Length: 180
Length: 326
Image 1 (cartoon, chains in turn yellow, red):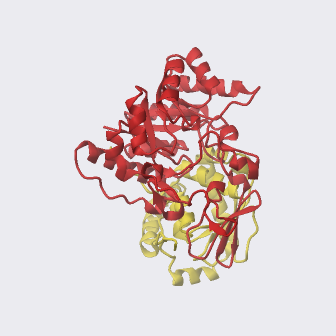
Image 2 (image 1 turned 90 degrees about the horizontal axis):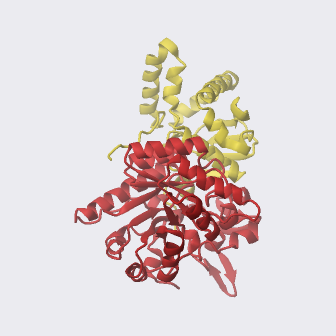
Image 3 (image 1 turned 30 degrees about the horizontal axis):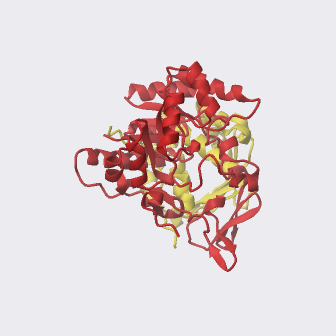
């Protein structure tokens, strides 16, 4: 029986090509700073990682020409981008919209895995711990970016909304309905 | 109205379940006292107190699963879990072990006791024994009974009946299955984990996906087929000249359509499996089942479910409720 895909939007190819010319070292530094700010605001996320707080996670957006090594380092996270294959304890691969959708609670990780939209390799327990820790943190990357932008929060919000509209990638947290 | 009992592996999932319409949420402490002792999952004591307070503020109840079997010499861990559940304000504890039930009844008489599915109580005599001797108010039935069998049990007991209606399907005599131990050394009964992720590996070989447990290949699927989790009872094996899912197909339970029959059989509460799943799963499933029980209570037709994509193997079954065994 064929798997029923979740129909995740793919990052536009032209935008992805543009990333080929971007210098990755400053971008890695910026993302490390962003991750450390999130760590300060969500310390419980790192406690929840438990034995896997020092694991090395390769996050591989399959529709982008770069992948990311994320090291939680027990609350002092480090992010490294690379155009080459990265080595880590576990690898999670899938379209960027799927990976960010997991962060924002828009998708269920198991469902994306069953449908083969998401591929995991390496230490499965580490992947589960990361998934559970992030899911519990109820992150909103857009709100985090605005919070660290000071007087530029308004323009940053506008830019994120534009990027969301152009790429179809959920950059803000999915709010649950409150019907009851 | 029938009560929906919903899973929460994290505080965020608890809040998602309550907001999505759960009448009751069940969860566990972050240790081996509960049968979902997975990495990154469950509640510390403070999170449990806050979770119970949040649920109560929104009119929902919280049940705490302390449903593994205490290890000899380590009973204090399970005793403290019972005491901390009462201190946190839990509406009930879900327990499987006879000794732990006796301890809870003796030392925490005001704390409501439910019998876990792990106790595998599957007839009225044994359920009445638990009710009489330990004051058990509700039993979670194992997933091996048909609807007429459930009705027969309810006809002979005053203990409330809770049944699983959605999620992972366990086809063994629950609480007595040690299959996982043979491949990993760990079982749901003693360690709170069946086919633990620490022993799971996936290998992608040009699109074909092999799922291994403890080094053994349990399942292998072609490119584009739904990915399996390597649970031994749902593995693909060769025996003699037959190759296939000899115990059970990798499918999930969905008894949504049977809600009217289960209500008629005297079932009090409908349980959703999935404490190991995300808050997105919890919210979707709870919203769906809340709509279904509300429709049933109002005498309206059952709404069409939209949950297929969330199920293991992307396929669902009514399980033993409608027995069609091979």
